[in-house]
Image (cartoon, rainbow, N blue to C red):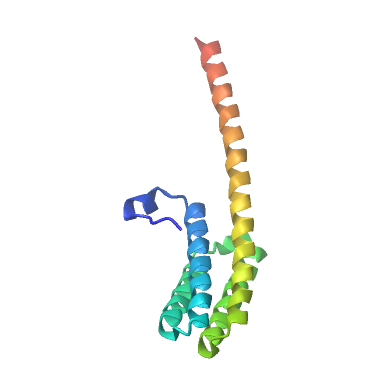
Length: 140
């Protein structure tokens, strides 16, 4: 996961920031599993709390006007947060792995959608630029 300065954060799109949050969530979940295996429960607790904080931030960023999928995503984030709380109480690696699997799947889908959106926007921008260039030539 790359380190972002405050200035770099302002240069990121909301979609890129969401991707960054997923990366942070995955990183904290993976670290918490290793820490629990090492029986370093204090630091594992901090990583799981950080993971829950990231889930909260992801939930705050949901645009509910997007329709039913937004509500389902909110429910999924809440389920994941509940699982992490239970996992933290019992130091249950299997629950953390379950949340990690869900997060990895969502992150992968998000990144794929971002790439496809970027390609589509790029194609549209090229067509608009060609159209505008053509208009400018005909008006001269």
